[in-house]
Length: 254
Ligand code: CA
Image (tube, rainbow, N blue to C red):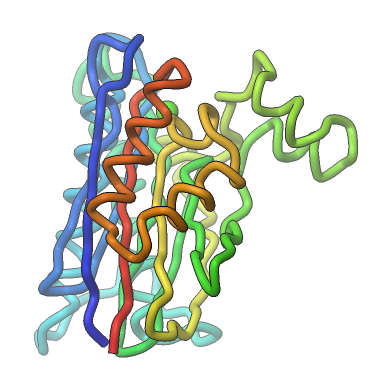
């Protein structure tokens, strides 16, 4: 299946630096968004270390070479799913190692949303509050569930999704690379149909605009993912651009 990819990463209107990172490797069909956290620009380091380490492992396992799997193989998921899951756990180790390199890096961490495509199957993984959405038949659905404090509150019925968007603790993630050595990675696979689009994004998009707005913009772009990517970033900035905004759009075609 042919994939058309368009990506944008924007500093937004309020932040000095961009702590988001994106990584596109069309050769391996690997697409990653990471959203770093930490003082003194350490968030930038965390997200960059993570995406580089994910790419490193996926590339290493893309050939025929015999490699050692640092966490073994999970037989409940496919080989490609294992590549992606292990790449993220490997990246977690790399971020943890980097936090020990300098006092300024202490406590830095990053989210990850990543897609690795194999034929018509998209393997989707995430940690933290970066999201993956599916655009199909004129509607969007969120495929990932945020590892965040506000999402836990929504799941327990304490607050509404609307309240979560403006909640003072909306940026608190409950899972991230750089936190614990035994990181849990959510992974799923989905068979893609022609015409469907995947959106990977950092929370700088979703805290500024709601799902209905994202759906409207994707609909108005009429399949033009370059136009949609630009419009999504523009809309988030028009609404205040309080955080860095990163989007990756993947359009699947016959
Ligand atoms: Ca963010």
